[in-house]
Amino acid sequence: MSVRQSRIVAAAVTCACVAVASPAWAHTDVGMAGGLASGFLHPLTGADHIAAMVAVGIWGAFLGAPAIWLLPVVFPLVMTVGGALGVLGVPLPGVEVGIAGSAIILGLAVALAARPPLWIAAVVVGVFALFHGHAHGTELPEAADPIAFAIGFVVATGLLHLAGIAIGLLVRWPAGRVGVRAVGGVIALAGVGFLFGVI
Amino acid sequence: MKALPLAAALLLACAVPAAAHTVTEGTSGFTDGLQHPFGIPAHMMTILGLGLLLGQRDLATLRGPIYGFLAGLVGGLVLSPFLTTDVMTAGLSATQLALVAVLGGLIAMSRPLPLALLATLGVIGGAVLGLDSAPDGATLQQTAACLAGTAIALILVLLNLVALANYAMAQAARHPWMSVGMRIVGSWIVAASLMVLALHLRNSF
Image 1: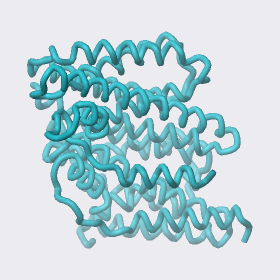
Image 2: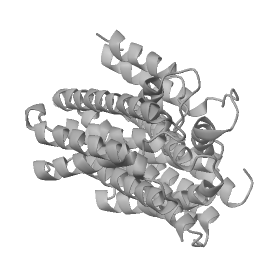
Image 3: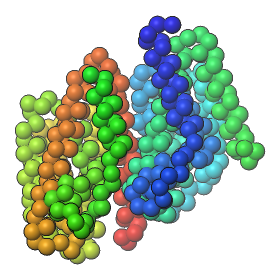
Image 4: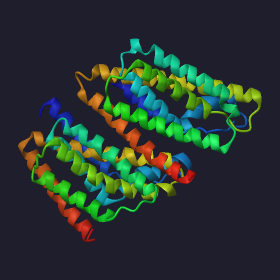
């Protein structure tokens, strides 16, 4: 294995470890630190959120440049719209179905190695970002420090994308390509589980 | 040289939270002012957005925006003790969040911008940071010391961020992920600020 390959594998392992790390419970849930911690943990405490965020990253890496950075940029930007709707109390029908559907569709896109035009990929990711944003936005008003909460969950979302990108970079190797598509299949199956309340 | 980013990360991890908007008994107002911006997420996001945006440009062209920031900051700090009503404070918070969203969006777009626009954003950024930095319940002397500390902290943080962002852009030819990472951070800034702005507006009406 070359030095470059070693670095990519090391980055993938690190990001995967970050994505699955257990939360620490030091300090109290008060003020800025509490807001940051609760915001950061919010996307990490829902398996449906994790699956979809990681899938966005994997799909972006799978599609290559410029999707590898465009999708993780589009997602938080559109998520903001959903989040604002949630904050303002505007109902969005089928939020939970949309979130489960995001895992199914994005997982399938990876599993089937789908390569649609970039704008279609961006629209698909953007539509699902609305549902995830709405779920985050609904909980924002309860946060002790809303801006710290928002920073925390946006950073956690970004790190999940990064973990997905790191996994997606394994497609450079034939075995990695099979593995990444298998991960996509697992995410899609998990999405079915979320949809029917099995998981 | 790889030890430098590691040392910087360790230092950041060891940072102690500051008590915002107060003068702590037993400490000088200057020290409180120096710590003040680090305890307020909105201030850190503003300075982060401004620093990354300015750092995307050639350093030699940044004199106007940096001076604009200094002018806005000094003006805002001088006027900050007079910002007393809730309506004014709420309006300032909304303006700051909107500004942060604009800064994040411009970072994410990563397009060449007119220097006049950057200078205007620098003035507005400095002004909102300065206006929102007056300590509560402090004497005139403590207030002056506190505001001086805040000004120095904000200027140093801004210059460091500009230098870091500029370094990242200079390295982007060899390491494209550096500029890509900056654009992603810009989108995160937009997302966080707009959602809180929506909450702010909801609570205001």
